[in-house]
Structures are given as structure tokens and as C-alpha cells.
Length: 249
Image (cartoon, rainbow, N blue to C red; front, top):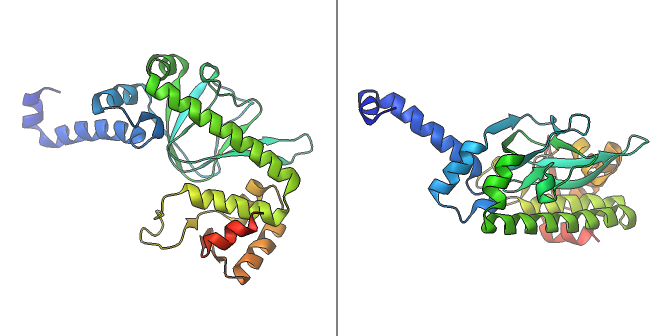
């Protein structure tokens, strides 16, 4: 669109500008891009189209592998694998501002893991060629990616250790503490809320903690009875983060 066209049709100009803003929005506030200027951000945004998924939808499956990198803008992703007897083990919980996916160039492998949307998601998707062109060629971005993958490996080792050595109640408390710590101080459900709120069903939390829904519900009611948290439909409000942290063992 020319400047003359924009002057003649201001509504069209606004739409055009809005599309550019939408593309950049997907990358804005993502940790690995924090040093980039607007022009650099726009070039990457052009190569990383946005995609949305609904809560419960599989984003990645080993039965349909593809070498793409997901840049998570909104929502949370559960990375898990399934044992031979059908039990699911959560290996990571990915929160906004970071990356996941199958990308051998980065040492980022999914192997036999699944990626499931815990919430409605917005992601940007990059191909292998564009990852090499835009991410690995920039030392600022590649250094941050290395740090992210290092933290994720440490988190996986801790999660596996928790599965072996912690009780169910401690695992549930640890999962809640991790989710509460990872989110902004004011959640989207109640922007002025004083207490962290976690949008999860008991079944979702049980899957994250590696236990049954019935055991998870009983443990949550025990925590609620001690004033540590408050339960509502599809939402858990942490009333006393310090006492919850004590319960993590």
C-alpha cells in the first residue's frame, strides 16, 4: 500500500499497521529477543507466523514429528512422555516468554515427548532454516537459548528426583509453587488480585504431579483446610505462599 492509498483509505492503513503490530506482539517480551530493536523484531516476526491452540490440544506428538521451534507468547505448555503401561510423566512446564519444540540445530529435542496446551495458546513457529538464519546467527539470542536449555535440563533432573523421593503431597505443593512463581504478580483472571491464582483443574494438576485425580483432590482439600489455598472451579488461589513452600519438602 502506498502513502497515497493510506491517506485515501485511513481504515485500510489502520488494518495494515495492526497486522504488523500483531506480528511483533507475538515476539514482544519473549526473553530471547529482549535486546532486539523494532526493525530486528519485525524481520523475525515475518519469518515466524502466529498460531493458536486450544486448551487440551496436542501441539507436538512423536507420531507426527516435525522440526519446528515454537516461541511461546501466551498460555502454558505441558511436556510429557507416556510409559509402556500408559502412565504419563511430566518432564517440563513451559511458560510464556520461552521456547520448545524439535530443533536439532539448537540441541532442543522432543524425543518421545508430547506437548499439550494447558491453556489456550499463542505461539510463533519457526522453521529450521529461519532458526539458523535469525537465531543462531545472533550471539545475543543464541546465548540466551543456551541458558534456557540448560535451565530446562536442570529442571528435568529436579522433577525426576522429586518423582522418586518426594511424597504425593510434596509433589503437588512443588507443582503449585512452581506455577505460582512463574506467573506475573497479577494474573489475567483478576488483574488486581493480591494472591497468585493458578488456572488448573484437579485432573490437570494430578497429571502434572504424577498422581491420581482423587488423591490430588484430597490433598488440595487438606491444604485448603489449613488455610494455605482456596479452591474454586478450575482455579486455585494461593493464600499463603510461604507455607505452601514449606509443604514442598
